[in-house]
Length: 289
Image (tube, rainbow, N blue to C red):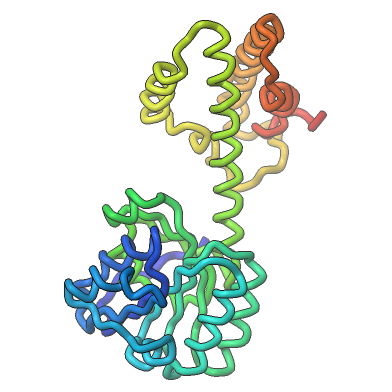
C-alpha cells in the first residue's frame, strides 16, 4: 500500500447521485472552500443540499465545467459509464473524478484508461461504513488510481471519512471492497446460522447478539486475524504461528461442539461444517480439505 498524501484544500467539488448514501456523503462537503455543486435527476434529492448552500447544476456537463473534483455515486456499471463518460468529456484537463459506485473493478479501470488521454484522472474510491458512518464522516475509503489523483482527492475524502488507503491502480479499491464485503456478508449468513442454533437451543438470539457486539467491540471480530501480509501458509518460523495455532485449537474444539449440538437439535449448519474443515488453512495452518 502506498503512503497516502496529507490533506490540502481544494477549490470546487461536484457530486452526482444523491441517493441513500450520496445524500449523506455530499452533506459533509457543504463547507468546501470553492463550493459544492450537485446534480441528480430527482430534483427532490438535491433540494435539501441546495437549501443549505449547494449549487444545483443543470446537468452533468454543467457540473463538470464548474468542478475541480467530482464524486460519483450512482447505481450500476452502465449508469456509471454514462455519467463518467459525460464528465470526462466536459471537464477541464487536470480534473479528478472519484467513483464511489458499487461496480465491477474492470469498469473503473476501463473508465480511467478512457479519461487519461483527455487529461482527466478517474479513481475508484470504494467505501466501507454504511449510512451511519457517512453521516458522521467516519467512512473508510479504499482508493485505486494515480497518486496525483489521490493528492487532489484527499481533502474531499477527509471530509467524508477518517481512513484513506491507497491500494494501487484504478480498480484496486473496488477489488478490495469486494474482498471486504465477502467477509461482511458471509459473516451475516453465519450470524443467521448461529441465531437458528441459539433459538433451537432455547437461547434468545437478540441476547446472543448483544454478547456478540460486546465481544467484537473488544476483540475486533474477524478482522482481528488479518495482520499478515499474505494469505499463503505460514512458514515454520512465522511469529504468528503460535498465536494462530492456539486460535485454531480453540476454534476447532468449539466448532466441533457447535456442530454436534446442531446435529442433536436438527439444525442445519453448512457454514459451520465448512469452517470446521477450513479454519486451519484460513489461518495459514494446514492444507485445505
